[in-house]
Image (cartoon, rainbow, N blue to C red):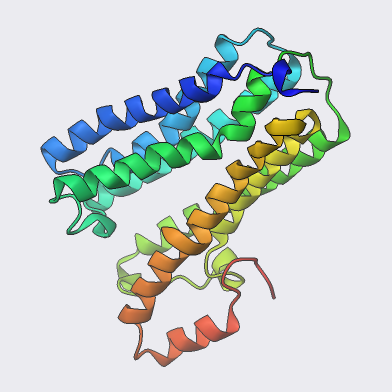
Length: 260
């Protein structure tokens, strides 16, 4: 399959849509100085773009229906969970000193819009391809990896949410359930979801469409080196620097991949 079997206009279209949604939510967040719509916009942007690509696509076969459902299920779950969490905690400390500065806050939203576009790149290519795609073994494998990631991420988020909502656990870190085997099992699940999606769409990738690899590479880079694990590790290292139990947990527990 060549690059000409792919609607290249959708690359620009999805970038513009991603930025338009971020600008809308940023306006609300900046005006009201609130964190309540930040993560909500993240998950819902994936959903909105995927649904648009499917609805207006030239082909709407089974493989595209499945991919659209994969992205929308992931997006609704994440957006719903994070919205419930922020309603409860009121404020996201990650944005302290940022939400009050218009340009720093705008920079965050710009990065978020660009990141969403890049992460969705393999799905955009697949949903924009001009040929009917029969389900292949890699589609099944990719779906299985995605489903495993979704289950891990959902269970990890639920376990942490339940732990944090018990008064007796105030100022403690979770080290039970999946968190006994990984310090960041939710991020591990997140990565499985997007690498699973990449494997799902891989059978159609050829030539310049192989640039879709930037999708999973982007989310991997963000989680491992930018706004994911480094942010939380720094916070916990400062908070529990004199706590021997936390240091023991940290030294004996895998940072990402759940291990005995």
